[in-house]
Length: 212
Image 1 (cartoon, rainbow, N blue to C red):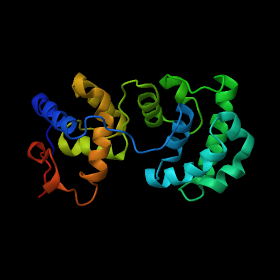
Image 2: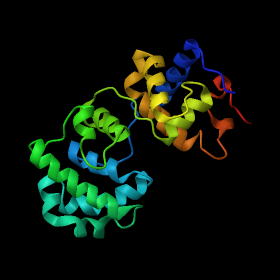
Image 3: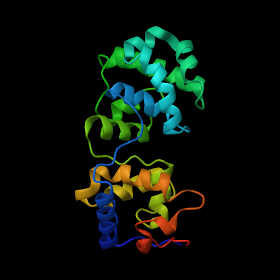
Image 4: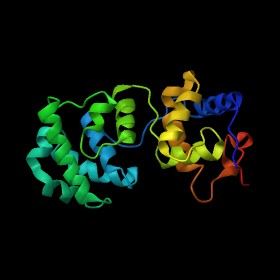
């Protein structure tokens, strides 16, 4: 069983990440809090590359809640059918856009509770939007963050809620704001689900799960 990392090693991990990528960025393309929200909703079970291809076409014709509601669900489907679960996602985009117009003056809210009241928006999506759109420090635990946290012993948990709670408690304040993106990028390109690239990993000497 993987052991939890010491505070010293946690600090060292993020110190190394910060030297390699001082200002990590998400890979979804957006121009406003609203387009970010739509992109994150679309990204569930889809790659950022695939979402960016779809939203490039979609945002060319609708980039506000009002415009999205006006073009309608069928037009959204036409533009996002290349990504998974596109029918359900199109419905969620219409419904959340209408709710933004009805309840929030067409603006994306800045609290967990309000964001999670929107159709298709869960805690992970809310965390991503709060962090990337509004600069509010949060930890969004996706599959990459969950995997890296458990493998390294950074935050061991059986579900995303448990991992998120432990990360919030264990992450150094100095590195908290960028931690989400560092962990996602590390999981996406190095600490992969299959065949992790331990030989290329900058924190392999600190990781109890190193396999080669």
